[in-house]
Length: 130
Image (tube, rainbow, N blue to C red; front, side, top):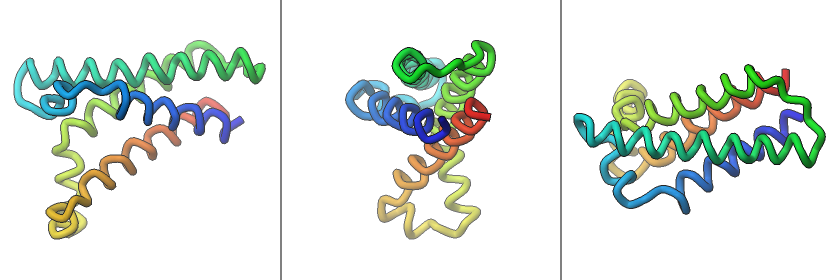
């Protein structure tokens, strides 16, 4: 069940991060003030909705019996972690701490960002399949 849940959450992440993310969200989600948070939270909400729909689809098609409260907690976790990671400062701080400034300057930030998102999804999948 873990692999099924993890795959669907990853698929949801890809759908929400690429075809469903607007140019406005991508440009402003790390920006300052209310406008930045509004873009950030609308993008994170897209992740929650898409992942929630895919979990419901998985439950219907594969016969999972996901408890409602843990499933809701997993979706809140996905939305919250996505919002924080997409503020960009956590990834920048990690890359400074790990002494990866050259890699960051060469485009490595996007890879670390995606790795952080996937790690958060794996935590959600582990909790839901436990």
